[in-house]
Length: 341
Ligand SMILES: Cc1ncc(COP(=O)(O)O)c(C=O)c1O
Image (cartoon, rainbow, N blue to C red; front, side, top):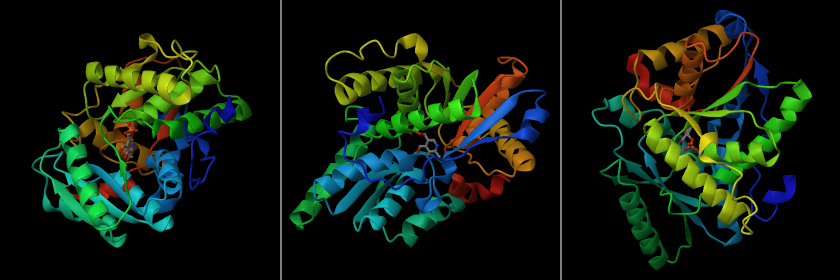
């Protein structure tokens, strides 16, 4: 099964395998659970994070096509765009970032620090898009920028946002699932659940699909960070269908690999929407930092930790269970939320 990814061009930049670590202090804090963290905040280049695994496949294709400029759209504080800028520089390319107004009423620190500082350090060209919920419009404007670059003699490559485009990024988490399954075997873990932030859904979808491909049936719970549970479940399912039947395999053999019941999502940590933060996420970020010395972020990984802690408090797991949380990174965004702390 490990060779299912071989047909896709890939630029291997991630420091893999990332560690799978026990969190002894937090385990004790909650009673007698065995809490583990998959350190995908430690993927290396550009301060790390989950998006690095996805970018390996987009940059692989971009380089195979001889492209010289990367275009990508995202929230103002986008870890994806920060890492895309890092990958572009590493691969000798230029980078255009489109900043969408996804989170209203944010103070100046949100617009001037964290990931925004790092875009500038990388010397990326910045564009703006005045809407945060119009994925098609954001992709359309990116295409217009790409067209103008073509007129200037450049060869651009667009990393798309909408689900109507091929979700190549999910391949990165198929690879991560194979890595994780191997680590479970080596560390003799049999987790009751894996909890991961679920946004575009590529991380969640790739992880779930990869685990099922190696016949590991561990429940994968997506912590919603942008859409409610009903919308996010549909998105993950749609993405999984495309990944299985159009990307990984076209014979129809994977049609039933992921069914609707296998897509688990929780939205009690959505905190009122994307980039918004309430006490439960703030408390989870602090609990993790105070007990394990680990930094997370307010938009994604902090919400995944808050979701895991909430599920434990709700009695969803039994004492003695192994529970794995994917640390997807995002820590530079902490600086953009400075005033909360
Ligand atoms: C730090 C971090 N964690 C999790 C996610 C969510 O991943 P996905 O968009 O693949 O669902 C993102 C997305 O940008 C992220 O930056």
